[in-house]
Length: 452
Image (cartoon, rainbow, N blue to C red; front, side, top):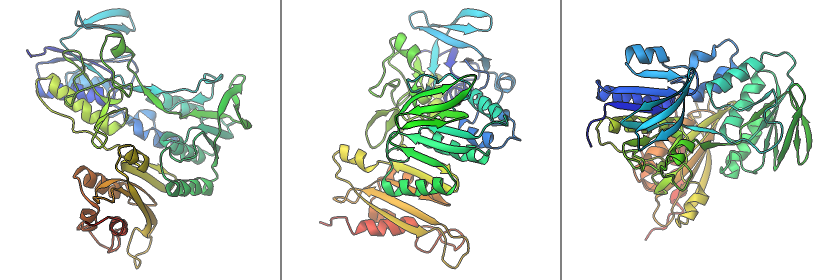
């Protein structure tokens, strides 16, 4: 493939700006143009709930690098408030709607980093004032401004995933009574009952009303939202947050004839190449290869978007790098409880024919003689026939994320339960007991491994 002289990137958040920066770094004479439909680029979307919680913080504290700095310091032409409306692959150009009208912009390399968008429930009232989603920095700014009203008493959150649970914490901190509505019984979706029980207790401790098995029928109001209508009655609401999942933005790719994967996101190679020549895709619009399931999935994550974007940008500038894949690792904080998982849940392992087993233990996070120890729950999923570690979920009051990282590393390395039980983990009373909770769980699991 001959050298690329002009790279166009569609989308200017995690994947897009990672791709643009990497391409420019590797090929300094490359012209790189980024089209972003919003007014912000390169911001920490995962930090939005914590910014909203603090009324003293400016919303643009979450911006990592401004468009001006990209232009002056990295020599990347970032054009905000520019929406790409069409891709003409045959003509190697995109049609862009900007503040001054339409224009066609040529390229000889293209990176699609169009991200994803909220999946809204198909009911009346989702556009009422006081009804929000939390996806972009503009969404966060609108929520934060609305919270300045002095007549808000009750917030209703539709959805019990990470965003919904994190925002329950935020709205409580801002003085609102909070109700969370969810259709499925598991909390968060897919987690086992013992983890869900801990989360329910944490929500209850902080006065959050959790209603499961509820179907939203509509949202009602006048000049603003007043109540939500469910199959079990109506609930008053001064603010409604819709946290009902996301879907990939693939309309541009589909219209251009670029292949989509089974998940509905853009199909990509290990090098982030699409089915079209000199077109790459990265981030939440693209599939992420799952190491254990051995196929592309729609797994929107900020960490994945940055990694994929870096690889797309490198390969657009002539490199030959590969994305190794993910395990679906995620963690969230709900009040004082941290909850996370990595690898396969039991139902996913069963679908792969692995006949999994699981053990769950509770242990202290620190040595018994050291003050401040918290309880932590560790659940391991493994194959009893081989002892291979398949997945895990952890919940507790401290040190959850780093223990989760150990599990992710162990699964990625192909460890067995025996390997984990033999881990030379660090020990000091302020940080862990002599038998770390991971080792305790592994030793319990060893009893179920069939020895030949």
